[in-house]
Length: 437
Image 1: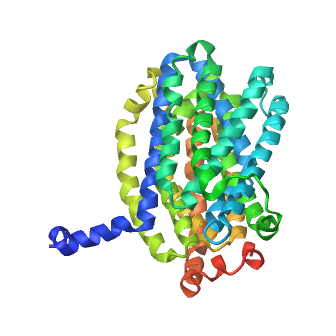
Image 2: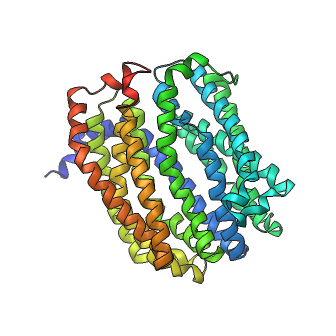
């Protein structure tokens, strides 16, 4: 009877209301965008694995992680500032301040990482050559530009443009073919060129609204620097650990295992698109004043309704997916299963942190991320030495269990505060005690 009611006029009306829900609309386009990016990445590495040597794939995978670290240290909390303050502050000032600061830091960080590559990872010293040096810094800036403009689309509830931005980035796939003769540099350049083209598209749209002038609003920085810095350190701890692991595998286990890890994690982490998208939507809608508790319940239901069957598919057909890249990549099947299983508990963390961001409880986020990063990196090192590549998967599962227990301890308290005072902290001030506990 319950299901027959869905086909009545009242049932259709209710379905249409759900489809108009901003949480679902933005989540849909963000999910579509990230699925496009992830599937594009899958095809990208599939083609790269077929065209290029395994050593080229291993080197470039570590190089991409190095490039992502530049992005991580360049976006000093400005992506979260965009989501949190575009709805309540001068859009043009927020956008240009965040963009200008991030691009400046990207250029500085890119040069620093190249000059320090012998210290961070001697195997990546190839980027010290003049051509690699220039490309690395340029592509790092373009990657940062993409991150900031993409977040701006999301914050403005223009996720359809975010989808188009990612669609343009897909040009990296066909670029692999004409750049084949360049080896690992060809893989690297294909991504960089795609980032530049995507940046030009974003520049065209956002140059009109909210408008582009590259001016930094000092008053806005004074009001928001605490929120930005807390996000910067908290997010860096979380993201950096995931980017350090491929480099750790590269240094400990070699190029071949680095390639195995990168492909397995690229497939296994696809499931994290679901909680990631819904977590971002929770943050966006909460910043626009929507009811956080109701949206959290909806996000949890959708997350696990989609997550469980996808993990089951990976478990059954993981060898098939890995085999598409080449028979040798099937060696990482165990790691693939471990990574996908760990997402069941990692999703709890992702959604919970979004609630903390809405409530500006960045002290708690920072502590959680410090704990998570320390455990994950420490266990990944110890387990990979003892168990090889699968050790990284064991480390993920143990880490996610510990963090889930910690979250369970404080979860009731946070929800109680949310029900008593749902939006006071998120809109009352731009500075003050709400930045830290």
